[in-house]
Amino acid sequence: MRVRFSAPDGAWRDWAPALRAALPEADLARDGDPAGFDAIIYAPGGDITDFTPYRRARIVQSLWAGVERIVGNPTLTQPLARMVDPGLAQGMAEYCTGWVMRAHLGMDAYAQDGVWRNGTVPPLAPERRVTILGMGALGRSVAAMLGAVGFDLCGISASGRAVSGLRVHPVGDLDRLLGQAGILVCLLPDTDATRGLLDARRLALMPRGAWLINPGRGTLIDDDALLEGLAQGRPGHAVLDVFHREPLAPDHPFWAHPAVTVTPHVAAETRPATAAPVVAENLRRAMDGRPILHLVDRARGY
Image (tube, rainbow, N blue to C red; front, side):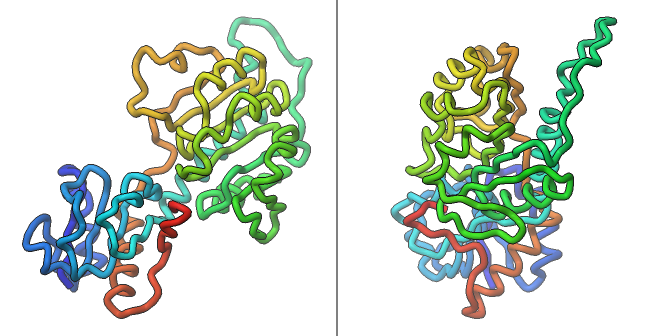
């Protein structure tokens, strides 16, 4: 099996040892005759922009969970698989649980200024509604960890497909459910249907003081609408890990806003040690003619 690795230069150093250990039968290469490759491992920033010459390739395996930067490439006719990595899912669940707990317990309410503020006690987790917008693999991982804490969970997905132990609603119920979302966790992909989904009208439906946590995609939220909503207390605080343009510009108003916490796209990282076995399994499946895992639906964009 001859495999082309197309990713930014620094990625090769990190990925090559893990891929060789997980897929010892493969001949990994960073360049060569396109017609000679059986598979492509891809990350945005790599040198392949035209997939037409890779006629023999049976799979393009993305190293990223999000595929918006490749799925619309008209030269890509090979099957495309997105990354669903247990390490990435664990990292996302830990990030979301940490920030949900901070919001739930009101950790920012206790200024270290000598004032004894014991008049407000947070509710217990079952009394707090946490709404998860996006119930793919990452959403389910987040729900499992938050469910173990005991939160009152509600899921929203494009399909409304059932998830064991969780109430899941179709996205058509979003407006109604936003009014009940004490904490909203956003994990939707970047598609035509999700861009700008949280606009001024929808943000105004959130309860006053609610928290919005977005480690999914920056395009989900209208930035100007969010700033206006924060001024009205709907939401009361936003934790943002993803943005329309990254890195976030140093003069962007999010940095200095007292009701915004910026984190630099660190919620979930694809880790070679846990992701390389996923790549290996999928490439073997493609070579054997078996169903490919996490195959991207081109029409839906994920």
